[in-house]
Image 1 (cartoon, rainbow, N blue to C red):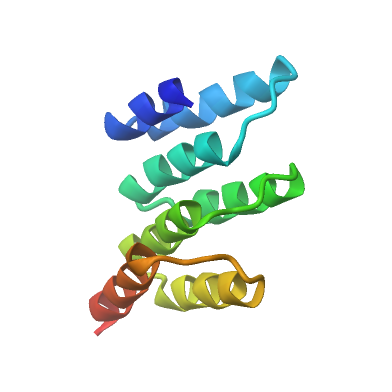
Image 2: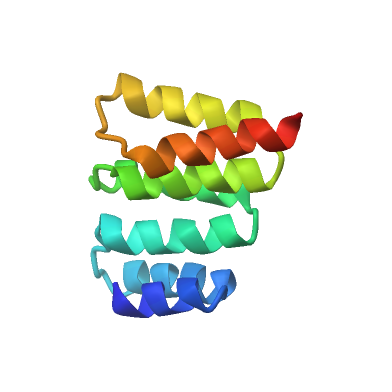
Length: 116
């Protein structure tokens, strides 16, 4: 998780995604912290499709998305001007009973604000 977080903080989304792929290649099982760091890197680059794909991949791999990963995915949608996707992601998370914090709702509000 530390390497993915370092790539995320340095805004190197390509390295974050490559690191995740390498982990999977070597049969290492990334946890939601790793997925979350990669999703946050995608958020910083406004790569909303990649962020949502990673969120789905985490769930398919058996990692229950958390509020941090959801907030980053919502933020990525908002950064790309995809407010509908941001709201849909937030709504899906609520339906799944995922515990969401203020950062998730702030990310959704930011997405809506940018659409006006």
